[in-house]
Length: 116
Image (tube, rainbow, N blue to C red):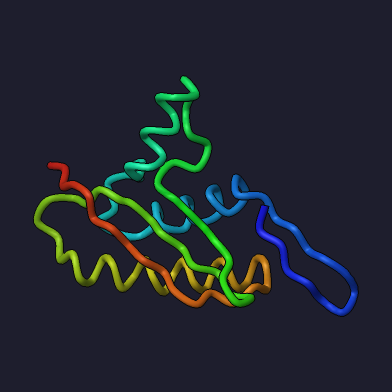
């Protein structure tokens, strides 16, 4: 759970909600072939013997702002820099519009390339 204090009380949003929101926003960007599990998520899913609901997305809070890590596969032959910039802007906008929480940083890790 990610929580923030406001003048009206505490707001908590689950990690799974952020994973679905961010995963959907990133997957809509041109050139993204899919979401990939981070090394931490892969080990965790093997230990727990179940699928990751937050596949490829990790969100944490620091000083009242969100830090987002996304692990993706891209389509072979596309401009990776352009894809990453597009994902950063789309994820930042989507999260801030849906939750109202400020996003400090979006880290995009391109872990593989896939042919079309």
